[in-house]
Length: 273
Image (cartoon, rainbow, N blue to C red; front, top):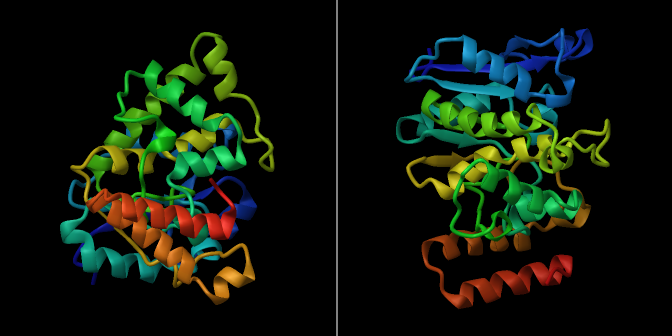
């Protein structure tokens, strides 16, 4: 029997995705999918607003691609909760280890794939009255702050902070017409034409973890699982591991030698300046 309670859901958008829910996960019914433009934010928002959450439990809301992207199953999530749940508020299960390792943060990574994302993030946060110490793309994040695809579990207090931030995005995108709303609701090149707001929404957990020290996070080892885009990185992940370790060191002690070494590693791999 699990000693730490957990409610872990996978979101069903259609009969096909309902059938694809992985063993051990509860179904979060979104078959009506009335706000498809908001992807998972709409059903998670509805759940958080309508349900009473147990304060000592962990909650997670995943797509049915969780296992395929991360290599994790329900038992792996439970094991990490049991091991670290007493001392953590948030547990991360990111895929794509190279996306964690070689980018400074999730906004730099997002800008690489969706030009204009970093500026949109800064304008959204300014409009929402969220003050940051540096522009979003200059934040430093390592594996303990970076999470993609909303593959994380958290206690209700963190989910409330996540929802409060998300509601500032919702208010702009659902509010009066304007230039910022237009940019945030512009379709991207991502399959299906997901709007820019979705890629900002997927970066909210990382933003909270990187800028609010009160949240305690633990990450599952992404180098043992997850999808690698290039076979060479899968065969020899050393540079990725070193790169992320240097970012972790930079967060603890901002010596210039760490920053120089991080830059040298990622230049060798990516050609990034």
